[in-house]
Image (cartoon, rainbow over all chains, first blue to last red):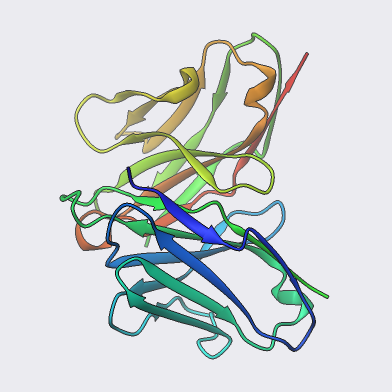
Length: 118
Length: 115
């Protein structure tokens, strides 16, 4: 149980275009999802907390208009990188918390999306 | 605010030797503690977690970790490593309650197992 799937696993896009990354909880309903970014050889940095039916909460320094997060259903959150540039190239990972596993102890991670902007 | 310090950025070790990956954390509140492993271009796989209770936690693939509250440490150990253990390892802390799952990660330790 507690499987989180990301799609696509890899994407290459042209500079100036937008790209959407999906994060799905496959066997549970996730009211809260988290989006992380990981640069090569570096750690994971939390970008935002995505709550179903409400606006995402962004971490300091993360551009809200650049990284659009939509959590329209209990099993799907999307991250859209708008007007992507080469510096946005990174590994993006989502995680989801299963509210049925109360008290909450952890979130479950997707397999990540490698974004390359050329 | 929380922080996690992984004391070794790279740990080379020979196959079948023991290994310890060190992790210290700082937090003004109680936290959950985790160790994850990441293989190239893949997501995170949970090795083990400490929530409460026994300070010695056993995880998958023969790994274990010991929580030391006084030293605010959560070191990961394995008595005998395999080539397949070569990967990046991350220590992480997470808030309790409504912020559980929102994690702060260390910078990672690259474990390289040599034949």
